[in-house]
Image 1 (cartoon, rainbow, N blue to C red):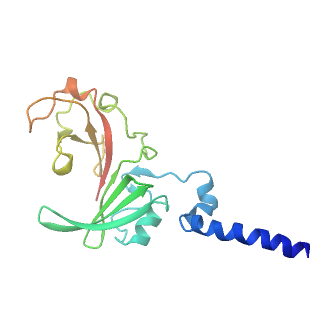
Image 2 (image 1 turned 135 degrees about the vertical axis):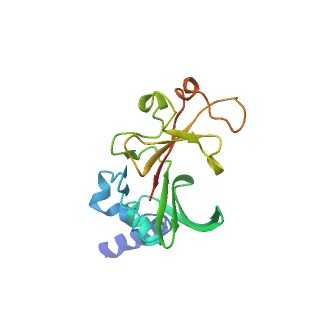
Image 3 (image 1 turned 30 degrees about the horizontal axis):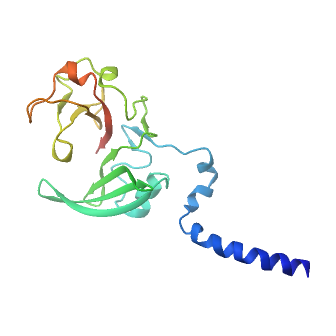
Amino acid sequence: MKTLRLMLLGVPLLLSGCSTLSNMHWSSLSPMSWFGSSLEVSEQGVGGLNASTPLNEEAVSEGLNNNYRLRSGMKTDNGTVVRYFEALDDKTLMVVVNGEKGTVSRVDVMDKEVKTDSGVEIGTPFSDLYSKAFGACAKATGDDAESVECKAPDSQHVSYLFSGEWHGPEGLMPADDVLKKWTVSKIIWRQ
């Protein structure tokens, strides 16, 4: 009788919890997630993403340690159709994964928790990495046209997008003394 009474009390509690369980990421139950499985950007890729990663939801999610909710889309870039995945934490865009020919070709990281293998992260000042822009940086294009993109030192695949305040002529890159105050707003890995 006591067991039946406990079951009757517990069933509504379990049923009310079902709606919250649907929003739960089951991967968070994995022991690897208990201590924070953070991603890292390196020459080889971002987390488990690299040029050989198939551009499908399962592979992209797994490559990002199942840390985000994904949504997919398509866009044109220089006349080429590019498929992409946006990785979100709640409603905040954290990572964008682009692909061509069925595999990952570019990963843009905006998540402040993700660092490069050399310790660079979102918010790192330009002056911590460069003394001048010449030879390493260029005016960014497209959606990032208000920013400056710089190749990571000694890297073929990683670059940093720097953003900050500047009121100069459109189309020109800010001077080094202005850039010194700018910070990394995006870490980019390209195939």
